[in-house]
Amino acid sequence: MWLRYLHYTIAPLIIFPLLLTAITGSLFQVAVLTGNSDQFIWLLELHRGKFGLINLEIIYPFLNSFGVLMVAITGIILWFKDQK
Image (cartoon, rainbow, N blue to C red; front, side):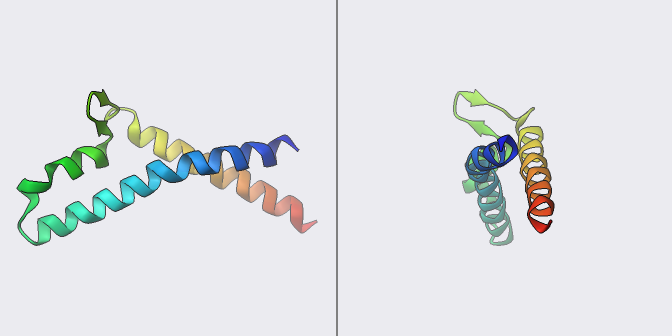
């Protein structure tokens, strides 16, 4: 079934940027709380989608949210189909 293939193909690709966003956001918040945010600006840049020369800051949030929606929608559809 093509939907199952789409879900299993997209899910591993989506997990890395989501984990990166969650981890860097959490670690930068810890840096802010400890008063060391100036030393960890690089975490904030990773969090926003700036990867050295590759700057995805404009589209990175949209890619993350689109990926989550795709995995959620295909997962819900697959779950309902398995319930029958």
